Image 1 (tube, rainbow, N blue to C red):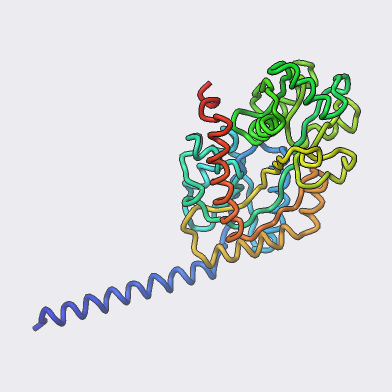
Image 2 (cartoon, one colour):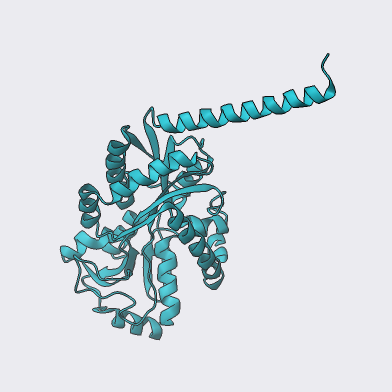
Length: 329
């Protein structure tokens, strides 16, 4: 005869056995992972600077992990379509992707229906981008001082092209304008390539973009007035940074790699190690050097702290630049 006490004891033992079995099963799954190819979501179009650097990383990391990493481009909404797809993916380690730092801004503006503080597993911060202000070679603005002086005397008359409202180039340029005490006329395009053509075609006075301007500066079609990083670029070492010129603005929009929240910690550890090695590889260095992209590596836990810090800064910047109003206009 089974007493209530014996029944409770059997239930507890059964529950403990099930928990032990689940833990063992999870551990074996993590040890065997990866058993098939991994999908990497790139939230930008194929061929862009971020896409090129991510593909280089995935090639090396896949070799280290013993499985191929297939890059899938899910572009749109300033990188937020791919970011949402990543946050919503199954947390089994077989879907990872690039996390643009702009998730900290667009999640607060409502473009991204995910919270970067809670909905991602952070693997590594990898490299940044080289942004700058460029004007046509025929422009009367020979230096950034010329640009600022004219803009102060003519509020709202100087126009600049950028890759979309709320993106890094738009926000960075408006932050610079605020520090410089000038008012500019921003002209949004669907992407950096279109913004570049707007300037080359003479429709806009200046371009705020990542290094899409580089070959045109080298060819003499554009003049680079300033870059936005901490340090001057190797390829354009004669061009000063905004900070050097007295404007305390640094924009490098680091690329990072992550996964959905809830991936087994043992799998995350394997991913962190693989991408740490990939970032340090000669193959990746060759690609980012070609793109004038600075190496900005952080391991997963430090990258997560960095994202949380940027999120807080973006909260202040959104109000300061009235970005919610601009997004509605």
